Each structure stands twice: as C-alpha cells, then as structure tokens.
Length: 288
Ligand code: 13P
Image (tube, rainbow, N blue to C red):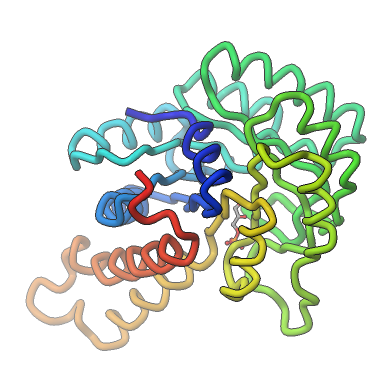
C-alpha cells in the first residue's frame, strides 16, 4: 500500500538520515527502485515529474502500475508515490489519481501567490492524509522542461511557507538539477543553516539535484536538517552507460540477445546499484 511521506520523513529528521526520492520513467525503473529499497529495508519515495507522467500515459496508469508492483513483488517497506515539481493543476490531478504525496512548486510565483496556493493545497492534502512538499527559491538547471533560475531561498520566506503546515520544504541552496558544472561553488551551508534555524528542527528539508553532490556535502546537509534527497539524472546516466555497453559489445546480436528483457537488464542492474549506493550514503537502510 502506498503511504504518505509524512511519517518516514519525520523519523528521518529525528534520526539524522535522509530518505531518497528516486524519479521513475517506466516499469523497469520502478521495479529496480522498489526491489532495491526492499532489499535494503529502506523507506523510499518514487518521484514522478509531469513530463514523466505524460510519458507513462498519465497519472492513473502510474498509480495502477505502482500499486500492482507493490503487491506483485511483495514490497513491505513504506513507499510514497510523489509528484515532483508539480504545477497547481498537476497537484490536483495526482491527488485525484491516487498519489500519496505531491510537490507543489510555487517557487516561480511571487511569494504571496506561492503562499496562497500552498495554503490551499495543505488543506486538501491534510483532509486526504497526503504529504505535501513546497518550494522556496528555485532549484537551478532544467528537469523535464521545468527550468529554474537557481535562486538561493530567503530563510524568512521559508519560515512563512513552513508555517502553513507543509510536510516538507525544498529550498534552493545553490543546488542544480542535472550534472554540476566544473566551476560549481558547492552548497550554501550558511543558507541551509539559517533556514533550518528559522523553520525549526521538526521540518524535514528537501535537497533536490542529488546527482553528483559529493558524499561529504550530502552528510553535512543531512546534519543540518535535510531529510529527503532527490536523485534522477544519476540513474539515467547509469542506465544509459550500461545499455550502451551491451549494444557496443554486440550482445544483442548473439542468440536471443535482442529480447527486450535482455537488452534492458544491464540498465536495470545499473539503476539498482545506483539506488543502493545512495540509500547507503543517505543512511536510510534498515529504517523501514
Ligand atoms: P538530479 O536529476 O540532479 O538528480 O535532480 C533530481 C531532482 O531534484 C528531482 O526533483
């Protein structure tokens, strides 16, 4: 059964570890992530961007697939199905379709509008027992057509949004979606600390752009209140590299090597290895 992310993140915040949000793209992705979380006895959040939602034929298809897979694979760890960087309309569509968690990314609105829309969604999600992630200060880079300016969040604005009763708060602290450039200045721990002080120690903070952030920075971010870390590009890179290797080695040309289950298998294993490494780094193994 899908669960809200509220309890798993409250435990993570109190226990000084983070739960991974791994974005899904298709059946293989979802299966790889669920099986790895189960193997590691870790709670997990499946992230769905609006672009990936369209690709997978809509939110109803995704809810059906994930619920079916939890049952079919005998998954026992807590799983939240979460809309990633949702628009206002997208959040409502996912709530209706049966997601257990949504992000409303109002960071591109003026703060008053972000507050008004987030407040409304807090009420709707509370009534239905769903978790809600809000955002202040846009994450840099591009994800599935959502382009962020990379603004660093204002801790006072974070406090205003946190006080609305959101479950978790994403705040821009110099993090970027996709690969980090060579000259990246690193995370703004001064800002993260100020945000953490403003919102208090019960508010789980979310670190987007988890791909390529060095382990020491991840650990420091967790020590300052980050309880959810989003990873997307790293699984994509691992999947693409393993698939390329299979084809370049001509394995699809040998026997029934063209069988799609065989062609996709190395990529699936690569996703599993990436997810396992992140769960270990984030400290959520054996916390289910
Ligand atoms: P990356 O693609 O950089 O890992 O970011 C993922 C993310 O933040 C999803 O919201």
